[in-house]
Length: 194
Image 1 (cartoon, helix red, strand yellow):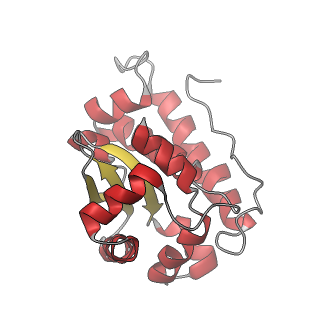
Image 2: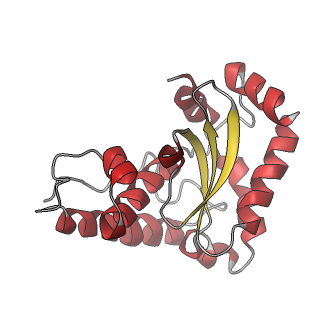
């Protein structure tokens, strides 16, 4: 066993259906994420990053170390933000910040989905906060994470094809639109307030 371990899902594999199928969860978590964990653990010895956190590796490493650490960090945040019993919208400080920075929750969702749909190739769309709490939507290619820009990552949708192809084929916008049904806003609010 290596330093990093595959996270346990906070839900049953079928819990997010029909938005994300049990089959997709099986491949996405059980194969893709597991491979990133195994790859990173194999790359660590002699790298100088043996004692580093995922966040430190993402901010300081490059090549295979960065790619695998970035994908682990991104997926850990991704899988940790979903629940079938989630409330439909954020409340409190996060809701106020979304209204302040995007005009409305609906305008935020539209911009977030558009950025996810128009990211060329593989990667992630993120909602993050800057040091002053201002909310920003970014497109991050491949394994990149907003941490590298000094931002605090809050919410992410995975737009690598393996995240949606079994359920949505090439219909990335449909996948993005469906994910709102399972976002656990309590988790996102805790990230924002931390």
